[in-house]
Amino acid sequence: MADHFDRTPGAGRGRGRGGAADGGAARPGGDGSLGSEAAEAPQNKTGAHPQQEGLRPPKTAPPGSGGAGNAEYLQQTRIPSGSQDKASVPDSGPEMAKPQVAVAPVVVSKLSVKAPEFYPSGYNQNFSQNFADSSYEDGYDGYLTLADYVQDFLNHLTEQPGCFETEIEQFAETLNGWVTTDEALQELVELIYQQATSVPNFSYMGARLCNYLSHHLTISPQSGTFRQLLLQRCRTEFENRDEAAKGDEATRKQFHAFVLFLAELYLNLEIKGTKGQVTRAEILQEGLRELLNALFSNPVDNNLICAVKLLKLTGSVLEDAWQEKGKDDMNEVIQRIENVVLDANCSRDVKRMLLKLVELRSSNWGRVLGTSSHTEATPENDPNYFMNEPTFYTSDGIPFTAADPDYQEKYQELLEREDFCPDNEENGTDLPGADYLYFDDTDDEMDPEIEEAYEKFCLESEHERKQ
Image (cartoon, rainbow, N blue to C red; front, side):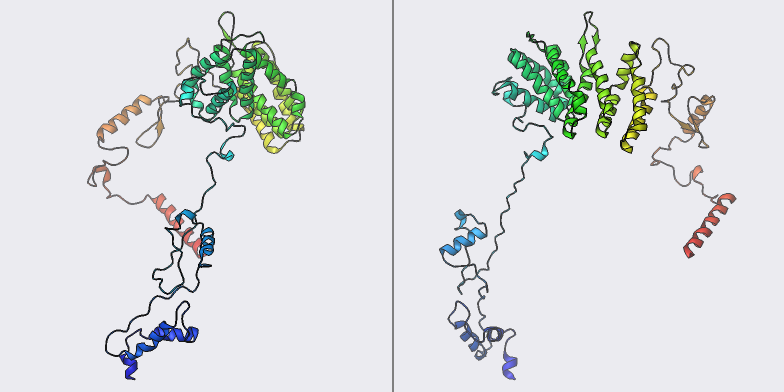
């Protein structure tokens, strides 16, 4: 019994584990000395603490302790071969005193900011330089071809359309020094046309670009000016309108992009007359009418949606131009839309879009006609005279505006009330204290009608709760 109580806590536990785990055999990698030391531990009864055994080696060691095994281990743990002197592989010997440190594998991401998923369809990724560098400041220095320079500028406008006003002048000056032949001008027209009909939402910017270049390019070759070549390129696509409207989905998508670009050209392309007046291209007006006929001739959903977009964009301008010529084309277009709604086998959503378009046209395309410039607006001749006037409230909470007959009397009463309560702020931060006249809460009883309604509400709530 004395032996048991004389032993320090924890002594001899290694002996018990060793005997139970491996039947008294020596530890792996040792010569049995650990077992003999554990056996001699109970004999030390002098009062000193027995010597504790060293740390046990790990039960599982890295595969192979030789050079080939180390290389294999490094390859599995993805440790670079040059860092073998920094990352040591643990041995299975008994002299190992430090625990094994696991090295986490290095994960290298393959995601790139230049992935094609981050660019719009039709965007050219090969020329995405920043236009603030020296190649842009020095004009076309650093660009190999005209196509590279123009495509780079078009991509730049696609990403930053707000730079059009500040950079278009430099772009036009550079083109005047570069575009000196018929072939170069044809190439320029084709590049802009392809960008405007293939990149989403570039049709408006492309039309503005075409209008600026048509007035600022100095080259006038025998084949035609920039505007003439652009209209010839559009005519090539226009002549295939019937086949494109009946083609497959990809063909129709390309055709719809051309239709919307032509609509933007009609709105933005300015033609100066002999007397200096600015007009629109008559040929584009006639072309849009024929494009509407082609879209309604094949009333599938995407063709009808394109027709709705076209009329929302140019409907008011087209109707004004037709009325000046005494034509009734817009009424014919609206009648055709109504026939499509009744007869065509289109979806319900598309029919709703067409009906909304008819409603928009009946409201004069959402335009509000202003008063004539030679007469001053008065409450008698302008029904919207008091539209933007502020609304005030009397002490009883009744709203009134400047259109009310007794506006002056009510407004004067409002001013007197503000003079009587000068400290009352709208946000309520500077309200007076509780002793103020208007905060006298001595009369806090409910009106009989309100009290009766409140009791009725409480009874109904209690009845519903019990149910």
